Length: 328
Image (cartoon, rainbow, N blue to C red; front, side):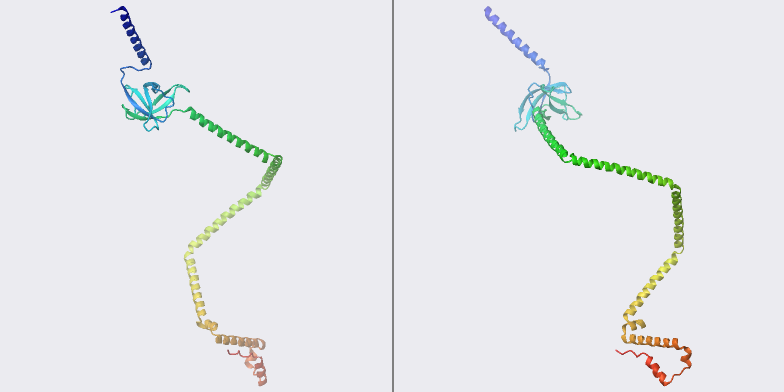
């Protein structure tokens, strides 16, 4: 074997060893080992926002795995993130996954929050949902819209202030407001004076007022005693009062029956009211009685007993007698 070929083989061997050593150093620098046991899980996300392969998976700040790759789902509506978790770390299905950034503009990584850690452990091939990362551009767009709305609100507020200055805070309105404030001040002064006068009146007439109140209290006590006496009388004579009310009701019923009988033409009163002939006769009798009582009052009882008038006097008396009523 020639010297040159030997040197070439030795050089190739050294280069291969150096490449292998560099690969091992690079792998170890990322925290990976060739013989560490791992299991793979899939994270379902709406957007990865720049999450790259070999990104770290941190749980409570401790690296528990790495991101293998990211790809679109078969439907193309979401992103699948394939991560490799070290075997000594157990992550349960109630843990919360989120894509976050290291700092404001730092590298993105997958953060795992254990929460209660009471679920079932994730196994190789499990799929969990991951929260979408913070999107700076969407936040900027939302902030821009918010700033525009604030600008419009400020313009409207400025217009409202201008209208208030023009319509409310003008010279006429301020003058009226000043006059109103002055009037209110005068009214308050008058009210205070009135209260002072009333207070002085009460102080001056305190004794008569106390006497009047005492008399009113005494009268209320007497009224209460009278009410108690009336109540006692009513309680004592409750049976008599009930009997009297019952008698009044009975009398009312009897009077109603009598009036009904009279209206129906029964009895003397009913006959007088319903029969015109009887009514005329009764009227004639009453007229004759009136003439007789008038003569008796004028001539006396003695004249009627002992005086026997002549025929002429009888004719004259007959002339004064009223004619009998015409028969219908």
